[in-house]
Amino acid sequence: MFLETERLALRDFAPSDVDALVDLHADPAVMRYLDAGRTLDRATVESDLLPRYLARTGWWAAVDGAGGELVGAFEFRETAPGVRELGYRLHRRHWGAGYATEVSRALVDNGFRELGVLRVFATTMAVNHPSRRVLERAGLHFRRTFFQHWPEPIPGSEQGEVEYGLTHAEWAATRTG
Image 1 (cartoon, one colour):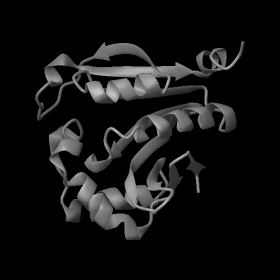
Image 2: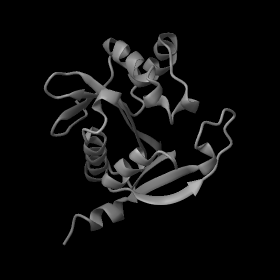
Image 3: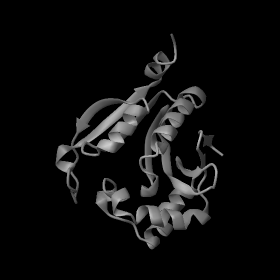
Image 4: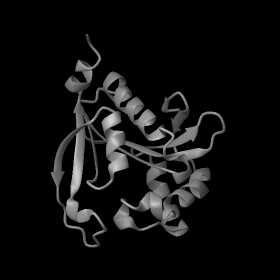
């Protein structure tokens, strides 16, 4: 087990997670702001996504602590020494339950407290307001709007991407008197 919160546990992915991952990545609502808005089929999940997850590249399976159901996937991947990227995707049936905020906060706290992280960042589309709220609730601060060229732009991409971040010093300042 990598990390536990009040309701969820983060663990390494297993080959047995493939069906839940296929279900997650086949949902157009989940993929709306990811991978040019395209869903992924079973072959792609099995050949591309699952091997990356199994290689322990900074992605964890979020499972319900009570029943063990795969709720989603969380990223806390080291992109440079002392820097971690935060990301997540949840099965739609778990949206609005506070899981993304709960686990994101726990990852940030664990990163700064236990892993020696110096900075955490996350990006999303500017129009992805639910994800932006999660990042704010997790303690990250808006840093910038930026624009990328996408070969297959999706609705809203003309408004750009946003980056949120938090440094260890900023995090520590919220923990002291």
